[in-house]
Structure formats: structure tokens, C-alpha cells
Length: 215
Length: 248
Image (cartoon, rainbow over all chains, first blue to last red; front, top):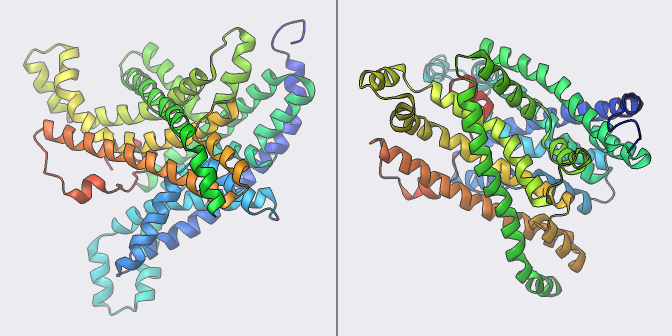
């Protein structure tokens, strides 16, 4: 390493701009991934309430399969399979689908937590099924899922570095590139860790407040 | 397709070693994580600020920085400061510390949700702190924490796929080689994901069994239906459970 010592502040400042560019990609991936996950997750949760087990059974299997196999392997799999699609889009998609399987459980719990009286009241008022869902059940259920959504957003943010495996230059790959060019991995990798902490800790505090408010 | 199967059969002997490496990381990481979790979990609920403060800092630090960053930091940066470890040890330490920090919250939440009366009753019986925890509080907390720990165990297994990038020959490495042999991505990764799924399933199954056993020891056991033992329980989002006091 350099002669003066192991850590050089100069290098740490030098790497910062490219890391911040990576941070933008990281946040982008988190936001887009989370949007996909929350919409798809809701659809999965609703489909899981289908009356026939011919829908529920296979869906359950697919959801469990996606949830219990490594995100990293799924990313590389999709990347090798879909050669023409840009890596960043694959990243959005795989992150979204993977987290949708988690989110579906959060929605399920949220829907089940709506008191039965609400269903009965809707039936008593002779509301059509669509209105029961959109005007009565979902507004209450989704309010309960907000903390879960926040938690998974924080956790997805911390899993975006997996995108390095499919050549997306997010924060971690940016640090690796910098390290490869200047041989100063120490500063680059440490700064990435610190940036993660700086972003994710306040966010998780925020989520915790949200939990207390909505719980 | 028959070429693919032939390549798969040729590769089967090395699958055992690959699965072994993944299992070593998963179980080694899980044991370390449990130790870390117990120390930090109990540390985070002591009255003394000098113990509670550092425990909280360590928990938030490992939860806040990404696993990917931690594993590569330990692998590439730590040797520059004179700590050089084997790749397998790096993986176990990184997985253990990262998931240990998550599990610490589970341990703390579960201990806190054991009714205070249990502590008081144990005090009334003049049990020492260690006995209180070992015989009265922990067995009850343990039954509460297993479902969440089972979730974390699966997360840990999934995280272990990263080890491929620090030169370990784990299941992901095996999949990658199979893909090179067959040039058939769909087949090789399909097989690979199924292998991960089977490992995860067996682990879940073991945790379901452990949960039944823990409940039985508390006298709350029900004879589980076959469906409960073989079924995959829906995951409890661990971080939600934490705030709600461990039970979800």
C-alpha cells in the first residue's frame, strides 16, 4: 500500500464521487424493485385466496421456490438467460420478483388482520365484491403493511450490491472498479460500508417510528 | 438434453463436496450467529449502559452495512491489517456476524416477551440469574424464537452463495461449472436452484421439528399433523416481529 500508512484520506475523498454515482443506481434499483415487489406481492396475496387449490398449490410452490433459493443465483441465472436485456433491467426485475414473494406474506398477514366484522358489515350493506375489497378491506390491510414494506425496502437496499455479479455498476462495483485502477481497496470498500450505514441506519429508524405509529 | 444429463452425471461426484462446503458455511455461520446473538441479545437488555451501548452499536453496525460489503471487506481489506483467514473462515465469520446481529434482535425480543411473572416466580424460588435463565426463561423464549431463527437460517443459506466470489467451491461454483460444461443455462441453473431449494427445505424441516420439541418440553406440545412437519411455514417478517415483542 502507500508508504505513509494503511489508510489515506486523500484516496477516500477521491473515491467518493464515483461511489455517490453508484449510490444513485443503488437507490434507483431499490425504488423500482420495491414498486414491482409491492404490486406483484399484492397480486400474489390476492391469488393465494383463490377458492381452488389448483391455483393455490402451484403458486405456493413457485413462491416458496423463489423465496428459498439465493437471490444471487437467480440474478446470474436471469442475466445469462436473457442476453438482450440490459443488466440493470434484469436487476430491477429479479429484485422485484424475489421481494414480491416476501411482500405477499406481509399482505396476507395484513388482510387477515382486518377484523371479520368488516367483512360482515360489507356483506350486510350488500356491497359488490370489488367495492368490498377496494373501499373496505385493502385500505385497512395496506395501512398495516406499511412498516413491513419499509423494512423490506431497507433490506433490499442492502442486497443491491448483489447486482455487481451481473455487471451493474452500483455502489459496490464502483468501489471495486476504483480499487482495481488505483490498488486502494481499503479506502474504497470501507467507504462503501460507511455509506451503506449512513443511508440505511436513519431509514431503519424512520421505519421503526412508522411501525409504532401504524402498529 | 441427453448431453446435459450426461454432463450432470459426470459432475455428480463433485456435487457432494460442493454441498458440503455450502453446509459447512451455513451450519458454521449459524452456530457463530447463535453465539453472537445470545451475547448481544442479552447484552442489549442489561441495565448497565456500558454493556448495552456497545451491544447496540455492534448490532446496528452489522445490520446496517451490507453482507456483501462485509464479506469482501473481511476478505480483501482485513489481511492488509494483518488478519489473514482462510476463505471458508471468512465466509463463516461474515455470515455469523451479519446474521448474528439480526438474530440478536430476535433473542432480545423473545426474552422480553416472556412474562415478567416468570422472572419473579424464579426469583421467589431463590434461583440465581443463570439458573433463572437456563431453566425458566430461556426455554420459553426459545420456543418463541425458533420460527424467526428458521427464517434467518434460510437467509443465511442464501447468503452463502456469495462465497463463490471469494474462491470457495460451493454449490454456486458447481452450478457455474455445470453451465460451462453443458452451455445450457436453463438446465444447469434450474438444477442448481432445485439443489438449494432441497437444502433449504431440509433445514426448514429440521427447524419445524425443533419447534415442536421445544413446545413439547414446555408442556404445550400438540401432536403435529404431518402437514405441519413437512409444510413450509409462511415466513414471519423478522423485523416486524422485533418491534411487536417477538411474537407475530
